[in-house]
Length: 215
Image: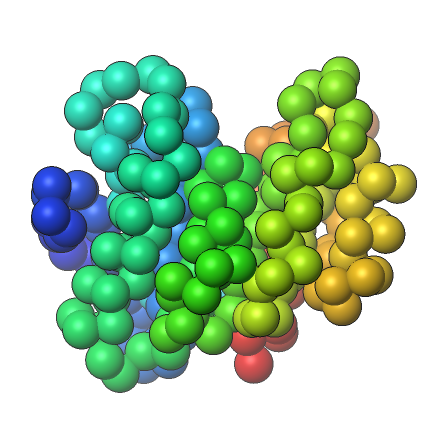
């Protein structure tokens, strides 16, 4: 395993690449709205994928890099996704590229894909797609998914308050995507103490599904 820190983009953004030996895929993972690339949740997802032989490239959006709390303009986030993909394509030419991320990061990635901005990405994987705000069910945030050309995998917990499954499932069916449901997991993939699986086991299970999905 090798780890290296990078700066990329017109207004340099921080990134970390974790690369297991003989990995063929690199997952370009954007963080959620409230926590950056160094958050323990991002670290845990990265490690679980690394253990499956998948390299990861974590990076910050501009607002997080600047220490701001508000995500600000989606345009800035989408531009960061495009720059991250371009950087990975040139820096890691031996890897096939998948992209996505946690919650908001996954949604910004798919938004970039929906307008054809990241054609070098072969697949998109969502760690908890934020279909709606808590307590405000709706599927407006899914409208752009119908324009995404890449295969998509949704990893969703049954206790996720940002994605009611009875609203998300029809979208999944219509866009011919794949969904993997984690029983008892919330939006951060935490599970209750009564759950027979630990969070670490849930993350490992998801990583195995990602490995299977990527092929």
